[in-house]
Image 1: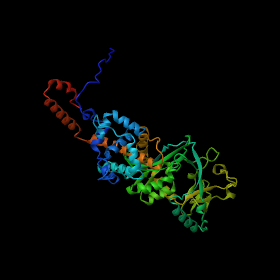
Image 2: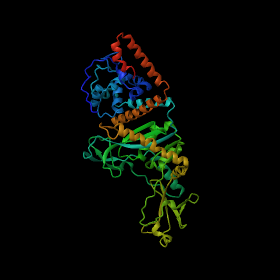
Image 3: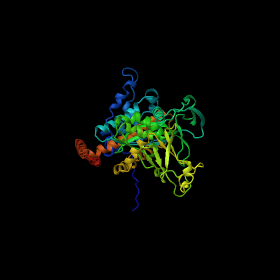
Image 4: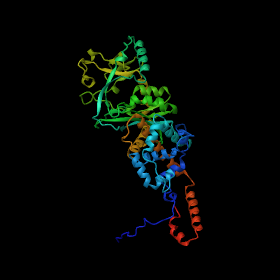
Length: 487
């Protein structure tokens, strides 16, 4: 039967507290109960004058406002303040009642500009939330899963300029050059001539709106200016570390600085990564630090135009004689080691030109097959051997359940697909607050599930409220508020 509600009750005066209106399982109620935010006062103490000036807004309230923005994917601080004005749960989380005035939307931006800019306070907030999870024994940093995601920058693709910059040496370049010289010396080759590093330059496209971002292009996606966020989590999905790079840097280039600054301190037993990190330099770096890189299978690239070409795996490396054997048992001898650290092994042209399988082996005009092997290939072979084990397959399969799920949640529910702020510093702030909120939700939800007293708390609160009703010696009042006696 169709019915209409013609009795509006919105103008009735009722006696009720903000506490009673918040559902017992609301995420903000869980966060407020199980996460200690008092550390924020210690972080900001040196940013305020303790004995002079006007009283400030409570710093904890200031940061809780920004937590609300990132927790519930509100697009701007202006909109966040509007939501807090009408959302009782947000007011309760901040400790406000029905009539308290909400701070102006420019309050946080002014505090950021005057107090928090160019500081590590947001990184310290992330670290403290993670520390609380570690103290509860939820985090296991022995196995880490590393990946990167791109966040679109607040920059117009068409507002750019071409710049010629001095090429920066890779983090491992000095060690590589030293080993190249030693390898050439062992093979009776002369050292390579030193290149003039001052003349090495590269041309890049730079945004005039956000110069700190980088031009990113992947697959069939259009080119955009973006940031590359290197991220690590444990096997249970707890975010352990992050670092921001320009979007035009490859994962293999940005990993080593990320590892040295953020990950090395955990002394992980294994680090699981995708194919973008499968380089000899990364494998050597991790294995030298007693960490096993868990890397995926790499499909061979089909360059030959025949139906069944020979791949590199079809050529057997003989470590004792330092040579390769082709499928027809012909030897490919060592010739030289290039600047990139690759040894070159070449076949005998006179033998190859009469081979019936030449078209399956090479398409070169001089009928010579060339195979390269990096001087650090042995480190990759260790990872490759582990990949075939059942444990290796299980470790790599965790990516889709951990780091990929982290990125999916961050982008879908916390606005991590793009940033509306300019500059690497603000991108670092966004990453810190987004990942802190993800860990915060995870910690509060897990603590709530494990709390044996959650039903007892509800029972105690109900009894207290019922006793208050009995004190109102008014049967009419008791009848009115009887429906509000539980939460």
